[in-house]
Image 1 (cartoon, one colour):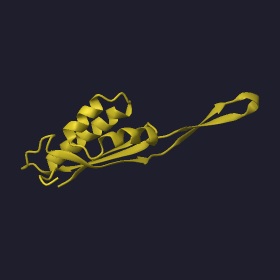
Image 2 (tube, rainbow, N blue to C red; image 1 turned 90 degrees about the horizontal axis):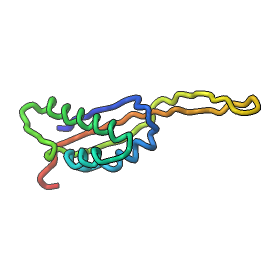
Image 3 (cartoon, rainbow, N blue to C red; image 1 turned 60 degrees about the horizontal axis):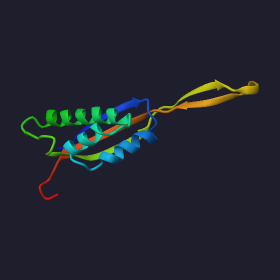
Image 4 (tube, one colour; image 1 turned 90 degrees about the vertical axis):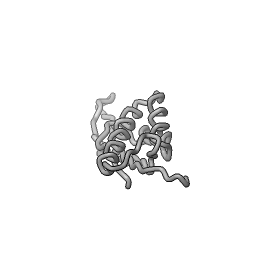
Amino acid sequence: MQAKAVLRHTPTSPRKMRIVAGLVRGKQVDQAKAILLNSTKAASRNVMQTLRSAVANYSQKNPDERAGDNDLFIREIYVDEGPTMKRMLPAPMGRAYRIRKRSNHLTIVVDKCNPAE
């Protein structure tokens, strides 16, 4: 049975978060944690936090099953665009530059590995 964790309103652009999500897509949880720990991207901390939450949710949903990090894998990971805060920055000659502060929603679904896979 799968378990899901969602991290909403992360103040990072979705484009930057999708790069990190692509690194761990389809990997086993222990491999994904190793990749995220050695990543230099700032978004990897948020992905690691959400991955730990998804693993904890899996153990809560399946209390009779003893599943370690090497038994679980990331079935789905995707990044959706969150709300954008719009700000104005003064520019020369009475103009204004628009600043868009983007955010995203990260969703991770973990499941147990099948021996056939």
